[in-house]
Image (cartoon, rainbow, N blue to C red):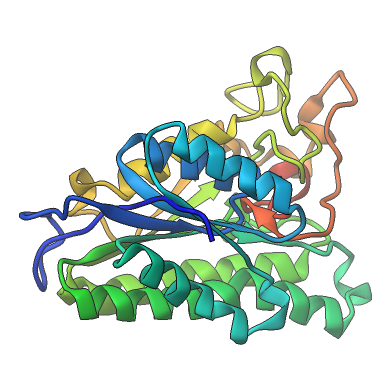
Length: 307
């Protein structure tokens, strides 16, 4: 493993930290790229040691760990394959044992297999639900048990998608999983509040990640006029909100879903334009396979598979 850290909270029923530990630890899934990587770095900047997971590219996972260490924090690196549940969920315990505690979990890994509803295979439907819904359920459950046992509360953030709120065409499995994750977030928040654990969702829109076909792009140089803000989002713009939700300042915030979408949900342009009215050909209108960081899909969202 490698090394990094996260934050802790106060006593039972109180999600505001009174005696924060000297070292706090977070786990960010899907952190080999995209929103997951940006979140790992943001949390390191805020003083967390960080558990980094990778699915496809170990070298990129280790690169994220290097970025965490550049902020003087510890990083641990583990492979995580959510298609092989329930076994891989034990990654939470390995990270918690390595750090000696667990204060924050960010479920940023996800996947999509797009196809029209009547052509979607049961295998593909089950695959997406396993990665995007069952994975966060099992990881969140293990993380909550650890947080309750150690005391002091905690933070769980589930990265959903704007498609938690509005459907993406030809993505029945993805829409189902993300709507389900939104409901799971509320249930977790309701049941874990008494332990000082807050649970929230962040719902990205079109973000410059691998799934959107815009990974590494200068978002300010791209025009998407069908979006009110008129451009894609940068993964760091999502990570900044996640970092706040993981902070002590967010102790009274739980059970909510926060879109980071450039106004997508108030305009919902996916039904009236192609590729958000882009004049350039950057960006793939259809999502690709894989598990990675982020959560959204196709033209209207961000990239779960190593975005």
